[in-house]
Amino acid sequence: MPVPRPLRERCREFLGTDGEIRYIFPATAYGGGAGFIFVVTDDQVAVISTGALGRSTPKSIWGAYPRGTRIGPVETGGGASFEFAGAAFEVDDEYVPVVNAADSEVFARDSLPRDPLPDL
Image (cartoon, rainbow, N blue to C red):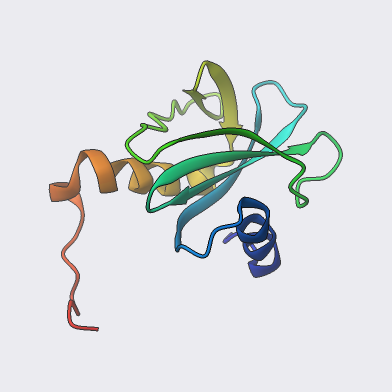
């Protein structure tokens, strides 16, 4: 399920960026608890905390990293999880391709499909 537009806009306003949001996905601390939103722009990977009770209201910047920072790999099996910046996160299975695409854009550009309409 895509991240709803109102949440995308709240994240954009919260980060104070007019740049394009390339990828965005929710995650939780491994084992439950705090919620997070990963926002990938052209120049950074921002991790925004949403707190433990709400998953749709940005509360604080947990960390901001250069766009060249790898997010995955995502381990699947007993649920999808990954380590990032020394912390463990869980993500719904539907967002695994989003994490993989964000990493592929930087680390494996040749593996991405060609743009069928590059002039648009």
